[in-house]
Image (tube, rainbow, N blue to C red):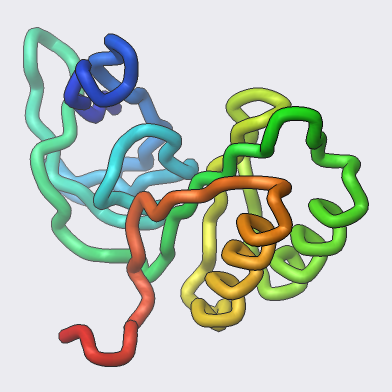
Length: 147
């Protein structure tokens, strides 16, 4: 399934393709972690349309409760770095998984069962330690003060 992107945002990349499982007529469940597309997470159910024969994202039908973050490891840091391994170990123990675009860039899935504030704190710790920067692709968890 294709997710159209703003080509100016991702150096000319116009779409991200994701795995999706048919759920019902025109609706699909996202089966992987988005790297480029914002506002979507694994397990979300989306409405689709066919554009020039390509199954294309149209809108979110139902949220799956997952959140998506992206981690970019700092120059000179790799996934085997002790600080990275320690922080990732804690995130993994909270149920997080990741997919790697390359050895420096990870898309992180935070399942509904994870304590989002603990995960976010670990992401901030990694950034403060200078081992990575991160951004939020989509927060599907309940957040205090947000309806």
